[in-house]
Image (cartoon, rainbow, N blue to C red; front, side, top):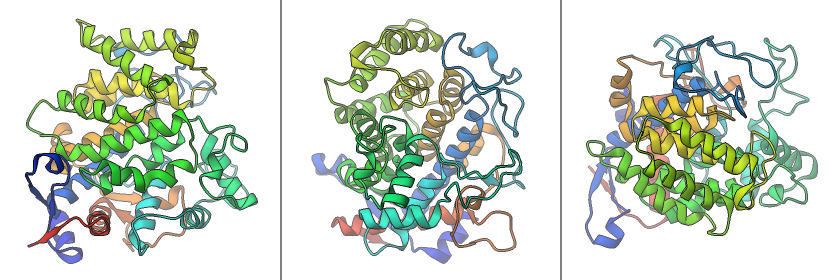
Length: 428
């Protein structure tokens, strides 16, 4: 399916290596087909992890936390007393190939940004383009469809995304004004992590280019430490192309995390979290005991307020950044183990799970990711579950798009970015 789609939509491109080659003077290339497989793996890996993490989202934000022993057990209610509708157990969500992946806030705004770059004359979105895209593709609370589950209008926006949307809609503000703490009290929440990380995949091996692409999108919802954390994730995604899938993936992830951590102000709490979690992992003789570090994170930051961190809500960019690092380091590059830990770690668990699920899915590519589970997954994607106004690219089928089509268009986006920045494209 993937090769057929690529043959119709894109020529075989050879993307010049633009990462370590900048310093080493060497050059390597990857084919568009391989990059499309990685992008397919990204969307699939993110979706598996997103819907897996949703089972435990907001179940535990303080002790007693979940542990490995809770894997496979019945799900417990969230802090609001609610359950999810798609699974009753704390386990991987593995739908059959004839189903369709529903959009959620971990994938839908990223989908929108890839679409906006794809249809734009330039790879770098302006503040006006971003505002127009948000208002065109995102429902308000007033015009959103009525949920068949909760019987009320649902626009699938929360905390800073919600604030920023209404600042753009009602006050005609443009980013970065929409994340100004004077008008957006939610500027320190997690939102930018889940909406902007994949800008790194638009600029493989080019973290500075990726950061420029993501600068205004990050500033829609985040400022200060939350924006720095979002930049960390963008850089990790940009550098992921250099990871050798056949080598020590965990060690290589720690290496690119060290490079990404240069985006964190040394005097800030996010840098302290990075150093603390890393050292806790490295010095822990039992690498299966990730709970030891998670519990230390709770005590150091949520209880004690170390490094100037003041816990506000379980949606904070900060506490979820620390939790995500626990799953990154203790997961050691293993997709299943990373997502299992992320889903059990606590707080806004679907977001760190989706972030690492997407990154590891990109590193693996779709075939290797499906081999991890021995399972064939759906390709169809239902963007109109949560957002609006996109073309139906798969008429007659459930959903409006498919991962192979999204991946093929994604290759064109990468091509556009590299061309804009003077990077050579070799066409075969």
